[in-house]
Image (cartoon, rainbow, N blue to C red; front, side, top):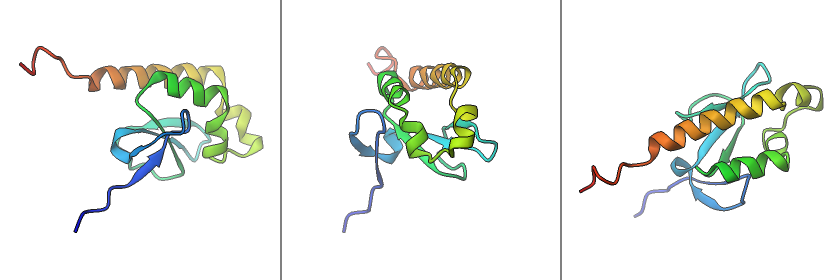
Length: 106
């Protein structure tokens, strides 16, 4: 009997993948979107591939607002340019840390 492996869908490109292979974003009780690296924070989550292009695609089509069900009153507060730059930088830093050094594998 095989063990169930949870899958999620990237809100940027629409590809399905194993939950652990995607990056989770969550809407906090303060109405702020943040990176959930441990994938344990409470609240509704949205998943994006570990590719900055998927993050940008999701941001441009306002998929975070839809997936996280951001209320219209909070929408402007949660989704602004500063939030975008902060999340993009955090995501880039995270994806660079996760890449393996090819020389260490030899």
